[in-house]
Image 1: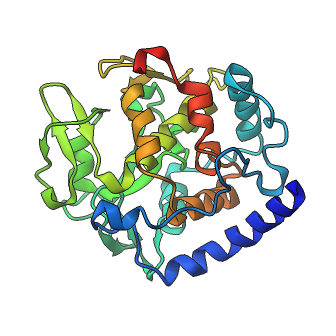
Image 2 (image 1 turned 60 degrees about the vertical axis):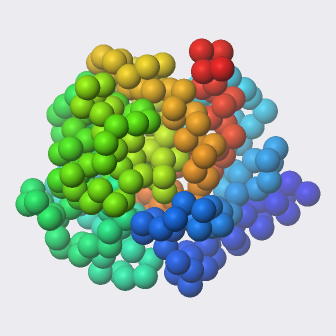
Length: 289
């Protein structure tokens, strides 16, 4: 039965992009209810998505043991990319618009924009560090966390600037850029709420970072998710909000396919895209109940 499940998952994963291209892109701004109809090719609750045996050494573990096993798995074969041109080139592949191979989808706006339209201009797209560099202690391009494309996404340069290094929480007022997209910021708290369509994406990227970087790499410190939103160096919040977002915004085919593309480029996967149920196994805390 387990072998059959893995085989079916492999077929589904390879066919996911083709099926996705035929459907409406859920990362383009649309009603959240419409997006929820598109689910990733992941197994039912209780089953493990284990592509090509990638997670063999993690299966059967929980809590700290599971986190440690995943850290070992996703640290192996992790290829360090250059920031320029490496990350630019990678994002042009990982975030390609399934309906237009000349474009990428911008995370916070859902806008499809030319791959060539990147830079520092007002209407350009640039490279968003979802775990802000100043909150991660990896401020140099030589750091693994600085160029890790699991948490780097194409974003509208103006919204990237508005988000800054704000932590993640709910509430605030609409961003000045593309207010219709649904992003909000609260300048009094220093927090940012992304649009509904990518709340889970943001959460799972941060859960990855907190698992991948445990202080074993000299270039990047031990990253921790904190309860609250005034976390300090190497910490980011709000953990309780991120736990909710992981449940609220399920993995879709764009995110699932992106994970495989990243593995092809960088050499590792985000385990919480493959198995979102592991988030609660590792990060759930009484403080959030």
